[in-house]
Amino acid sequence: MIIYDKVSKIYTKDDKPVLRDVNLEIREGEFVTFVGYSGAGKSTLLKMIYAEELPTTGNVYFHRQKINDLKRKHLPGHRQQIGTVFQDYKLLPQKNVWENVAFAMEASGKSPEEIEEDVPQIVDIVGLKHKLHKYPGELSGGEQQRVALARALVNRPKVLVADEPTGNLDPISTWEIMQLLLKINEYGTTVMLATHDKGVVDRISKRVISMDKGKIIRDDAKGKYCI
Amino acid sequence: MWLQFKRTFLSGISNVMHNFWLALSVISVIAVALFIINIQIANIVANDLLLKDLQDRVNISVYLKEDVKAEDIRKIKEEIEKFPEVERVVHIPKEETLERFNRDSEENQTMKEVLGILEENPFEDILSVKAHNPDDYAQISQKLQGEEFKSQIDSVNYEEHKDVINGLNKEIKSSQKMAIILGVILSAIAILVTFNTITITIYTHRKEIEIMKLVGASNTYVTMPFVWEGFLYGVVGAIIAIVVSYLYLHSISGGDNGDTLLFLSNTKFIKQFLGDYFVKNILIAVGLQFVLGILLGVVSSFIAIRRYLKV
Image (tube, rainbow over all chains, first blue to last red; front, side, top):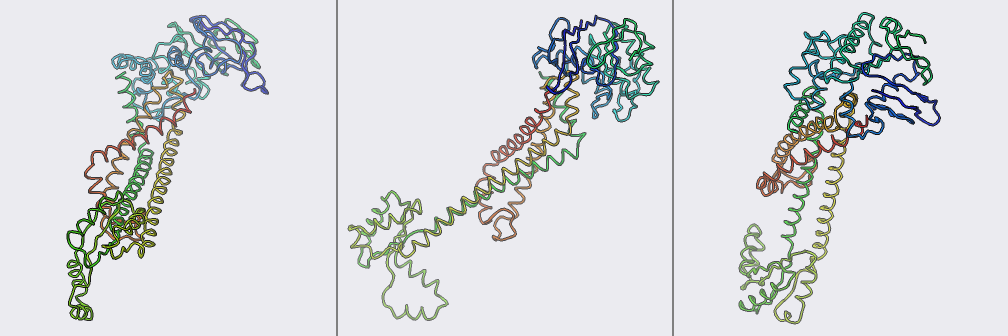
């Protein structure tokens, strides 16, 4: 489904490479966790899926389509197929829970009827049915991340990319988010997760890709946090 | 298409409501910018009216010899009216001049006694010549010194007054040029300040723009709410500017010129400007105001947001 073919990334000539000749294939429906020290290249690798970063050399394929060759006008359509969750939640502060989740559907041109039907359902799945009209500032970190998750899922993406989604959360909220991610994966969505959390990685026992200095050093089908 | 239009418009309104004080500051800046532009336009037009008024008062007087008959006066008048430089010629009979002189010197006892001694009207028939362009008086005066007029024209007062006429002309033109230059500079400053204010407003939204792009919104979907915001700022700013400009101009019209005035050098013609230009063409004046306000708001927003769309 997603293929990294000899991908390297260097920001400037004098910098060390952030990614070095990465070759990787992610199959549909997999749950893949990326672990490694800060600066290992995990986030850069994930950002290439939704084209926030482009490879310096090599190619990234999504369903056989070369992402790095996508024209600017096709980027929004591509990103609508990919749900993204970030460490800092990235919610729109002036929109409430309903509006934040609905925004993703509005941006993809969904009708008001579809939005009326889907938004409450997805917000209910993440356990925030009673907080539909709250603003991000009125929610805890864990709740904000659940809203972000709802927004990421509302367009039924094929892939969910989560870059350190539990980085700012307490252990209980962390595990709640992880359970949601696992549930989403059970329904068939491919999940790609970058995390520092050893406890989470060891507990979920999924494919673990360990990275160091821009290279993949281990790839275990049911891995542990080995950095 | 209609759905996107409606969503982005409502999003624009929502942005304005959520950032009320910021919106108010932008609207104020647009209103002030338009107000400055309006006053500059009023200034330039009033100056132009002043120029025309002064030019109207400038003329040269052709004094005719005593023995020139009424029929000949009519022929000379027609001849002078044929000069391409001449706008009009008015005949002032000597009787009218005497009457005017009597009125003006009613208080002056000495003058009254002098006139009483004289048996005849001492004044001459005058032809008052008005040129299209004050620069042409020299040429008109030269033509009047031609052979065909020598036997009928006693004197032409251009030579005595030419320095005054030329000086006045130069002053007025210079003043008009200054008004236009000042007007353009002040308007340009006002537009730049408006653009900068809107740029700063968009800057405060940069993170939201980034988020919208990452979630999959197109450039159009991200840009349009801000363009609508600019549109709303422009409309409200224009309404305020029209009302304040009219009230201000109305309050000072017909007053004395003086240092109390902010931008204007002469207020005598403001009433005429308001009546002849503004009120008579109210739809165009108001329409232009809205166009300018909306352009300021929309173009500034559009240019300001482009740098944040590269995610």
